[in-house]
Image 1: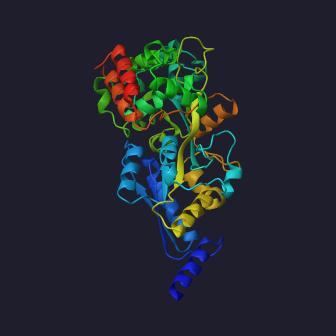
Image 2 (image 1 turned 90 degrees about the vertical axis):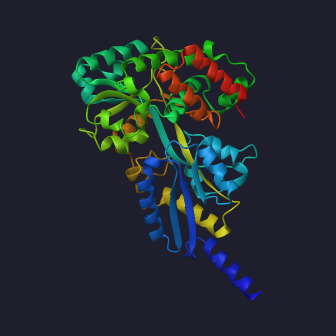
Image 3 (image 1 turned 45 degrees about the vertical axis):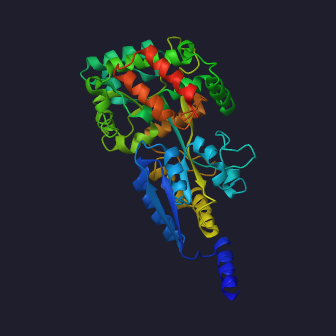
Length: 418
């Protein structure tokens, strides 16, 4: 009994704010491989400032499905203390995650972004990253070609820009062929044009499952794919489009070899390593029609793209308390804020964080947010969408299927989705 009393007292000390932790080991499963090194440095700084807590950052392979990874670790009884994942992951595994609605940082969360709230009212996701994506452009390449990015509003405008850039000897653009980029981000724009909030997405998914949506007659899908056809035509690597790696693309747009690159601000750490001008980049929306006034031609998808959940099933009370301490550290400590904004180049989701991102892509996104020219971010309308539909987009990229074939595969996916 005496030993139990000592253990209870130790746990009470661990859970008390401001007191030192006993030897507590926690883990964070990271699904953003491009900031693995930065998170490892942040973990060291956190552990140094919080004696008794050791935080390890567990990497996941780039392009791996977070849903499948999380399913595997729970099945093996080896769940991480903290899990970084997508909105769908938060909902699918909500019964395994702690309710965070009473945490201090809730009151400082930005009203611009939705929380991941379950049907019962629990908040299961800490908003870690605000990101945006679209057509990244290299200012120097466009200036040499006489292209003003602010004048690109339609698919025809984009093709005209491609032609002018190509005429200078540079490549018009490079397309990253990863399934997550094509299936989640690029095709995600079509869903964003149809579903303008979470309620709209829920209805759209239900309509897809019920067979009420004919993709071939959907204006958003057809317009977006018309633009993709133009992109395919001017892709600097169209001869070996599927051989392009994620790491090769920044090495093309950074040093002024291509004018455009479809991707998000998460690529800045890689682009900056090649950039001849550290300020010479920005975003334009991906055009979806030839009418400048059409919804979508003036906005880019922006939202919280990664949340952090806290496991309550396979981690001890002490580990859960330490996990909550880390989330607070990210929001309220100077070192944590610096790690998020300056080291990871992440736009913060909290009003109390005064640090401003310094990289040009994050600055460009902030400008779209300020002008309210944003689309509701949708990249995972279903857990395996990026891998299944992304594979279909890869086939379309290299003309292994035509538009009718792509539409058929998208419809088939939704007919069989679980």
